[in-house]
Image (cartoon, rainbow, N blue to C red; front, side, top):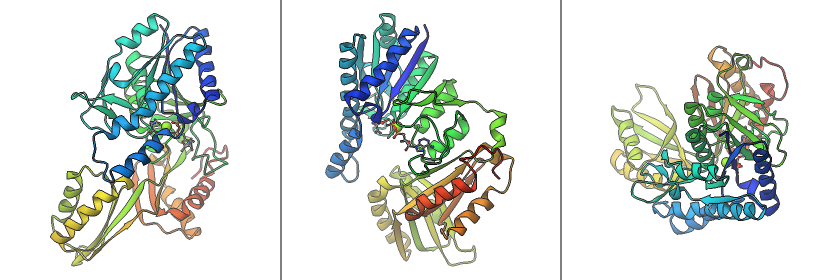
Length: 411
Ligand code: ADP
Ligand code: ASP
Ligand code: MG
């Protein structure tokens, strides 16, 4: 039995015409002899609407009932999709995460998938019924409904494809593949016909929301063939592939950005052993993830400045932690800056080529863009800049690294 998993994102399900188009892809695959499993996200901007309703009720996002509320968007779209599919003469059945079940860790939001029971899916496929599964949601061992983090229905789809040993997982979205940068910001961005897992992992974790980071991790771990393609054009998209030597010829492959971060600066912190541990322990106790960290001042200074970035959604919680820390550590002041953007250049070729940092920083300097924080790994360089320079920085870096051209070496 050759199985295809097809995942449709919010924009691909925004109205009835779009759902009909999605169904036409299912029809085509069935005609070719495939068994099809569908995973759906919420329709259009539904999750954003639900989240803004929730935020009016609970600023600190502390209630366990955030997940059933947010996941209700997927319940609507899977049942809607199934009703239309059956009307079109294709037998289909909707499933919520708990009905399979999709078992996750304890955590209510940003939960990890532990296991997926596929018996019900297999039974449907044997009877030529298309299972339509709500993405983004699962159930934990206490029977509570959990969600996988924003964009998590990609992860549901790839995890199901892994469990079913599917032929391929098609991620249908509103762009026709993975581009060298967000095509909404860089109109000249180029679609890649293939991209290496490692590069895709960096791009998505640094903000390219075209794929949920954990979906890429699962695909890599379980050898799932993943394709990102447009639900409007239906042409070939971008395939995720294992390392390919020829891709390394191009040093930089893409640019990612994220405006989800806030920069916290603590000024006048006493420079003595154990201070960092106290600060970051207080944050970790409250499950606040810290990304970039900077400490300025020399080892002989009496006081230093600490900077670190957190997710914007954790700002309220962090404010109250900082005020407690200030009493304990008596530093001078703190600044919370939410008008920042992280811009990153990514490429496997950075492992073996020098000159990327020089080119990146020179280009930003040429445009008079100040860098607040820098962080690097083997295959990426990230800078934190003021949000107002986001477009300028991304477009000029895209140009400087010649990402829209076909030239191979760009450093
Ligand atoms: P869906 O609702 O289908 O899951 P998303 O909004 O989550 O879609 O992801 C698709 C969006 O990702 C595109 O509209 C695009 O603006 C954005 N995006 C960011 N970076 C990239 C990139 N490098 N290539 C393609 N799309 C990108
Ligand atoms: N509907 C959820 C969200 O908007 C999950 C997804 O789209 O993948 O985050
Ligand atoms: Mg998405």
